[in-house]
Image: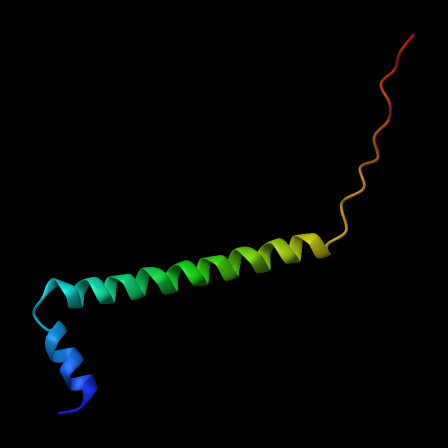
Length: 60
């Protein structure tokens, strides 16, 4: 019996297996979200800021 078989047999039918799968899914989703957030911020930083042509308010 290989080490992988022992691990999968130990996790089968218990909450530990479900928790391990859920933890891996949540962890990979968090990494994906962090990468998307970082790349989006980088894209925004690379763009030039919009120049607003603002006329000053009229005063007396």
